[in-house]
Image 1: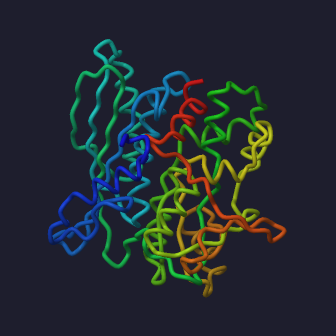
Image 2 (image 1 turned 45 degrees about the horizontal axis):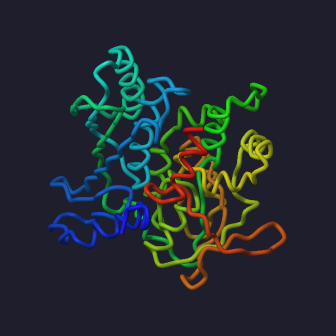
Image 3 (image 1 turned 135 degrees about the vertical axis):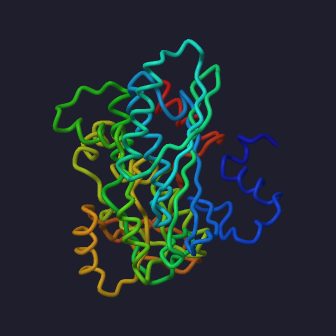
Length: 347
């Protein structure tokens, strides 16, 4: 059996199955956006790591080193947001060819350090090595109150399904950059900014975690389709998603239409929006979402509801027609990922 036959998530399942159970004090190992462990101050520690490889996760062709660094840090901070936590410390490991310009590395770190500093997070160390291609790995440590921790497994039938911001914009920006699409600035600027300078929803994650009835919580890094699959499997639930309720920016819609795609396909399979996907009870929700926007500066939209597990993941259009979700976003190692890479990055 080869890895491409089982894909990234199949490989993770096999690795998890062969490892011994976590030691006492580790409350969440493999299976969520962060590892979670007990701290002596009564809080829970959060630990996440992510690796970026040149030609897979970023391209020097249409992103500056500053933008690459910013995006890399945003993705890791987003994992902390997806647990309702606060980031504290960062470790960075970098591998680059020895002919790389020092100024390129300096600009890379500027992007990472400026975004980390915006959330009071310190870059405290790391490692540098020579490598045949660029490799960047970031580790972030954070913390959260036990009662405010958001897990993928928290969804309950009857709860509302929500997302922050809008979805599909980062993928639209990637398409603009890789295809060198000639667009009016008022169409181009938003998706490109969404792709190159994503904003981790730290304050939004903390607000969600502070709600006494908070359910599931994750971030949208591999596309809404993959997020829903993760939440469904972790919580043993199903979902009904109202396609016409998924928030998609008008510029994203224009890019999708230009490429003869559905805007909702960008949202379901695009990825790297780093918005939050979460569930809350329906009670008093409209009033609470007004408070959410006031407190965080971000809008949250109800896009569906949580169902029993036998319902699966249903996509309902504006006419009430339903279909079962079949595409689950980007996945490393899979045959689909090779198509995605050739389509999104390397053409």
